[in-house]
Amino acid sequence: MPRVKKNETVAGQAITCPACASSVSSDGRVLHAKSGRLAQFEKDQEVLDTLEKMVKQLELREEEKDKQILSLQLQLKEANIRLEEKKNVVREEQRGTRAAQKQPQGRESGGDEW
Image 1 (cartoon, rainbow, N blue to C red):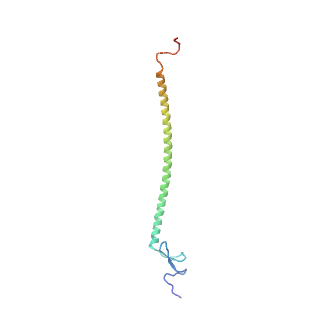
Image 2 (spheres, helix red, strand yellow; image 1 turned 120 degrees about the vertical axis):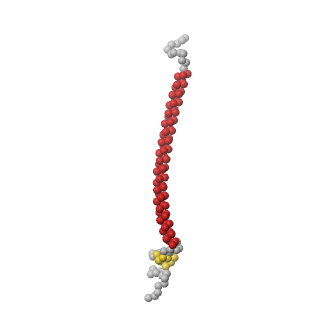
Image 3 (tube, rainbow, N blue to C red; image 1 turned 180 degrees about the vertical axis):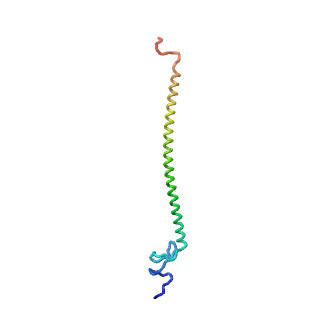
C-alpha cells in the first residue's frame, strides 16, 4: 500500500481555504484543520446574530413610538381646533356686548318722537 502524504486525503489533496485559511478537502466537504480565523468568524457570527435581534427589537420600539407620535399629533390638532372654536365664541360674545353698549340708553323703543 502506498504511503499517503499528510496533506492528501481519500477525496484528494487538502487545500487551504482562501477565505478562512482552514485546511479542507479539495471538494470542500471535509474540514481537516480549523484555523483561528474560522473560529473568529464563528464568534463574529454569534455577535452579529445578537445584534440583529437587538436591531429588530429597536425597530419594533421605533414603530410603536411612531404610532404614539401620530396619535399625540392628532390629539394636538383636535385640541387646537377646539381652542380656536372657543376663541371664536368668545369673540362673538364680545362683539355682542359691544354692540349692546353702543346703543343709546336714553331712548326707549316704541314710539316716534316726530
